[in-house]
Structures are given as C-alpha cells and as structure tokens.
Image (cartoon, rainbow, N blue to C red; front, side, top):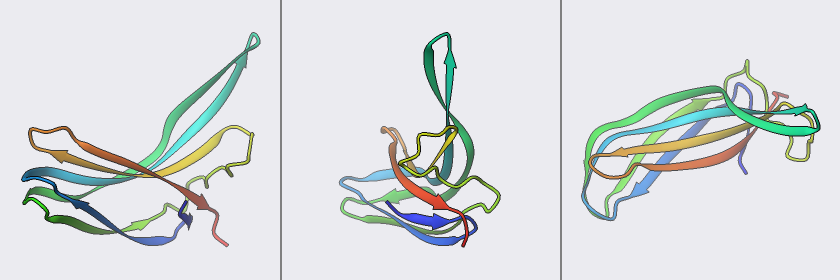
Length: 125
C-alpha cells in the first residue's frame, strides 16, 4: 500500500486502456478520507462509516477514445496538512480514519468505471 505524508505533493498518473470506441464524458480522481466509528448500546455494537473529507478534480472532459488507445491523465495531488492521518491497520481504537484514491470515469451511454486504491497517510516528520 502506498504511503504519503500530510502536506506532501504527490505526482499521479492515471492510465486506462480502451477495449472499444468510447466517449468519455468525464474522468475524475478523488482523495477521500472516511471515518469509522463504533457505538455500543444495550450490549449491541454498531459500526458506522462516513465521509470525513474529500477533494475531487476533473482530469478529462468530453474526450473520444479509440479502440486500444491508452487514455492517460496526470495530476499533482497535495495531501491536506490539516486532516487526520490514517489509523494504523493494527489499531483497534475508534474513530478510525481510512484514506483512498478513487478514479471515476463517466462513459457516455455505458456503465461508469470506478476503482478505489487504499493509501496510508502519516503525519509529517
């Protein structure tokens, strides 16, 4: 799993190979932090996950893609310095913070493509 520091600038490259002719309405990349909480009531435990913070940027809009063409877009991501770092995977404490990058391609008259990539965010040194 990739690791980054709060405040770090990270160059990203998104690439997708097209298997057929497509019209891309929009390709976005999001940096998302979810928080997971634990609530114990009356002997029952309930876990809730909610979006804590997110930032989405549009990398491509209205682009025709030919079969076997490699769709490519670059972006420099800055991890917000004022957010919570990831909760260590071994931690059992709550709340927990989980970061991910999400690629979302809106394809005209076809199902969207979504991929999520978990990442670890740590405090600056």
